[in-house]
Image 1 (cartoon, rainbow, N blue to C red):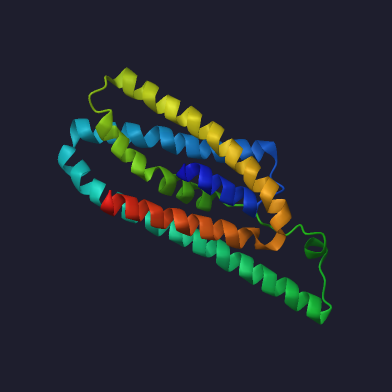
Image 2: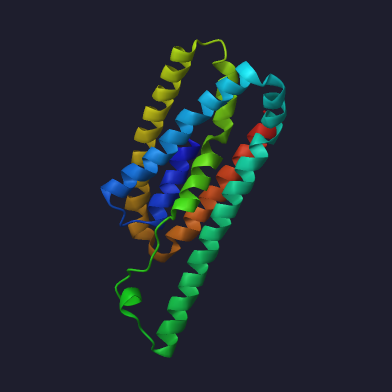
Length: 192
């Protein structure tokens, strides 16, 4: 569900996203959701002491990454709104800004950080599947990846639909969603 929520935020940020790009973004999240349980399974079978220590910092890593990406998204959107307002007041216009074609795409770096942040708690799934044989663990991870891909595609479509209506404020709302998910990951990891 974290990956779904981040997908909605990305759809808000980038409402003109093409289907191929949506597939890439959903695929990145699916790959991370596949990899993390397998990494957790591996850690349980080989380095159990390290896994116990890692489990304590997992919520903090997700929290910090999502707060950073959400804050950056809000900052960039507010800066873009201010720049458009300043250009409008000064009479200066650029073709890209006039046509609404400003570069609002989520970069590869941000996408990877989002993928890690939304899937890092899946390392714990490795603990729950630690009794599985390697084939069963891989099968479970593949199912997780497929479900994640489908849910993220739906989230991106939802975000795009809503993002078109929200216009210039979509990036702020998307950033708030990311920060909220970061807080939720931290609270869930510390208290539940």
